[in-house]
Length: 435
Ligand code: C5P
Image 1 (spheres, rainbow, N blue to C red):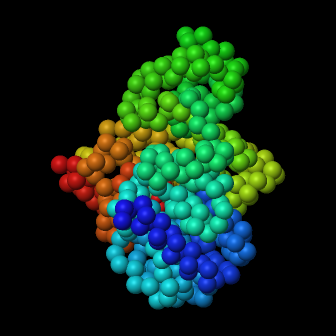
Image 2 (image 1 turned 180 degrees about the vertical axis):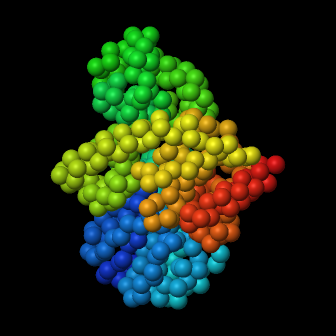
Image 3 (image 1 turned 60 degrees about the vertical axis):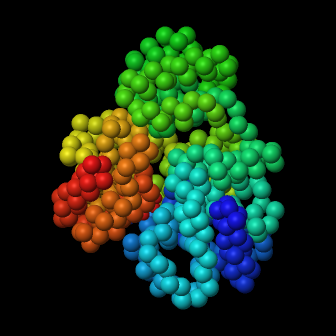
């Protein structure tokens, strides 16, 4: 039996366990993949006549297990075997983080994770992809593939293997459309190039350079991205490739930016990357229920979400301009220590993929309560040798913190007084892995 059908069997087992319950408590991560996974599962449960309660979590460090009802953990859980073993309830984990340790369940338990069946959960399927596999076993839920596509994009995955299948499902049932184009947000061209976080083109505080950039290729600044002709798209693609080279972006970014654009016809924002940005900013702003309502088609939530997105994107772009000079060099890493900043994840991602791709980057944010949120990122090229999830897990453990994630994108939570020791250990482990 191949690994995909084994994963499907696990999804079927999850449906069996679900069938014994009329209610489920869903815990999911607060990013685009987690929110999409939560939306898929809750919609599928509603359609199956079941009730649910959904809670969005930044992580599991302060999580207190509850007993009783069926509990579903989405986009989290696999790496936290001790905590999961304490749950005295039927339990389903649908996650794509690398499992760590053995989970000893107290009651019924199904663990659906691609890593358990030899499938790469970093690139080939995300938590929302797993949620979709379960939803597909639960009923006629082909339309929910659109949300699995959002999760995959949010986690910078690739559309081959299971993700490829999910995209094909969605295209063949008429919910998604893949068009040649540029991976750019919709809307006014000037604004899209200036404000885009992915791809990040470093034009935010360089408007004169941006005008010059567009003038050189003869494009009208007032044009809408989606109205560009194929010839104009090609011209813009060439110019963007040069711009990425100029700012020193990671070579893997090029194939992601240039080539195709996914439109999701059954979701309230059709351009998939715009919707991913929107969902992510709502999550980062602590407005996860707004994000969920957007995915459920609530127009008022969409209006609120767009305002949140505009504010969040501006704050991140401002932060990047301000922080660029504050990035410090370790031996094998770069690091940035911020205080009370808006978010660590997009800052770390942009430094790692666009501005300083040659070393792993670790971004720390000291919050008012003395707790520190850490986001670490490395390019796929670096991650061939180095596993950031392990680096974060071990370094956090050393300072009584908690950490984990994926090879290319990981994180940790530690205390302020341990920053120096933590960074030293991160650098040491990175040097050891890269040697
Ligand atoms: O928060 P951030 O986007 O940087 O997290 C990157 C990855 O690290 C996510 O997949 C998240 O679940 C994981 N992580 C973790 N344990 C932590 C913090 C983050 O597994 N303490």
